[in-house]
Length: 481
Image (cartoon, helix red, strand yellow):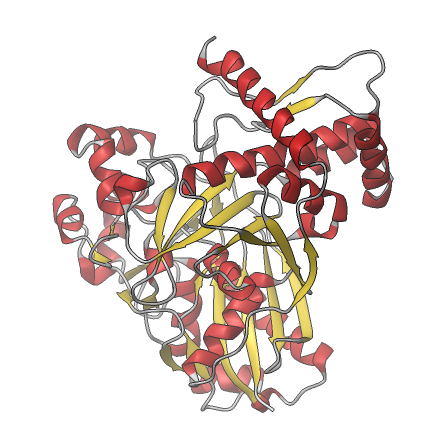
């Protein structure tokens, strides 16, 4: 039996998961690591920890599964995007990794706006001009650390760094490259125009390859440390949301919804029709001839956790779901706008902030929990309308922590009018990485099996009315104010 090792390298933790050929989890291990914040706007990480915890969790997953490591046929990586680390030829970090959360490059973002133009940047790269992306941070690096910039062999994103450590080869995929503002979304390559304009040598970037292709075999040193066969293949992986969409079964007619700390809706396209969909970002996907749009809710599960901490201290989510369901049966009219960290797509109201609207003396804590679930569901619909104007997407696969709440799943089905499918495990990103690992071995694995299905219920019409009211009040709060 072939076994596949998926490395899921997130923003604050690393999880290694072992999957069998039926995409069942047979072992896993997880460790957290911290963020380094030396000053306001600066968010960094120790890339050495990325590798150390990859090795530690891989060993932990093997031990929990009780397998012979030599039975692992292939490895792949699901990774946070945009972050990068400069390395020398031995893949030693020359500076802390700069996180996607880092906003130090505001001056460079303004420079890009002046010199290229925000609309041109979006049309060319599929991304808005924002300080979170890699290009303005590389420009900052050129200005502030020219010696390190000159010494750098490669600028590697987290997945690229792990592949380099596993194989000795510097490779990235199209979904990771899409988060750099240096990727030509139409021609699926590094943008020579942008690189030349800002004096970024293409030789300092990893080569591009499609996910699921072979990046190389593990080095003798890695094989020795983990007990792997030297024939173990390392597959090119993908950015974590794209891996998760693959694992959940993204295809034409079915979108995916990740409902974790943040929320992300992914839609598959056969061409980069940028002019048709301008309110959400575009990305390359895991195979040729495929692109995706991704609508993001900056705070999703975070909002429900906030309600838990404020209103339900030391109580579990079962209690929250029960009281939220009671509020639903009572006909709660409380509305929640989940802009808890400021403006969010697709409308980007500049003054937006988190709001509960419609409180009265009879409002109880369950009403707040219900309002949060409904507010996130309404934002899902707002993004769907921005991404799916022709209404062709009739199904969504929902995964992440929010998928554990039957009430929340049903609310999303009723609000959007879509059938909601929930896989048997929330580890969709790891499953996507396992699929890519198998692809590199010439084997096709299925997407995650569906465990539950939620069809729109008799509350559909009531939610239609509440949604329209939600949008009307939202415009009065921020568009007309």
